[in-house]
Image (cartoon, rainbow, N blue to C red):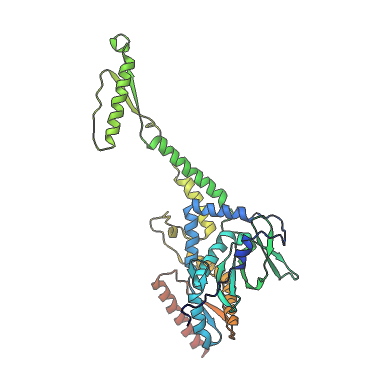
Length: 374
């Protein structure tokens, strides 16, 4: 009697295997994508507003539900969407879609792989690939894609099963962050200067000047008295760190001034706001959602909500074919007939009272039209 069942070897993503191997099957010209990837990653790390905006877009895109045309297979499809492994740390199709959209916004394109278990011919999981290491070329026809993965030695290995690859790109394949490095570099320079100015002016330092009179005997012992004043002053300042207050007593003409007290810090509110306005305009996120309260009564207007909704619907249109391909691949792997469609959750960016009033007006308009037609 067997106490332990033999483990089935887990399938490895082809994109991951090809990236680790040093293959010379296909040599392609160099590409600037790896450098752009590092640039955009550093940009999100250095400017928290940009990282927060992308995360907000991913969350605002909302949830979805795959619907099978054959109702009797809906339960199996739902179970697959909820339990499919995604990489090392994720599970569920929603997790894959969030990471896929994050890569799409950051790098301008995103790639994933449907990993199959070769022994059981079932989907073992989903893998979010590194889009900056995937090279896409045209096949026999203008609509035929060929995928290759850039290896460590700058050579590329062609993908054996391109039908398992899911891919999406923004318009022109350009990142949402395109154009922001120039603005962000100026913004970071201003913040760096603010920090340096506070190190120089904000951190209070004192200039103690001892002026002995030449006619008196103090001038002869001025060096010893200056060193004594310095010791006593340092002792008094160090005692303040531990909450002990000591008075400084000196004899003679001693002048104490704060270094930089007559200077003022440069007002950076206007240039910083102008730069942030450019960044927010590129990211299409209302400022107050990012914690930028430029107006005391700022709130999202209906026009802003409509514009943001259209932006989110655009990203949904890019994700829909990818999700349908994954759902259809699962049904085929199980030998089930039917096709998948995606039903997205409603985007609710308005107040409930405004939505209720809109529904009431629509109902009244429909009632009036029905009376006129009759």
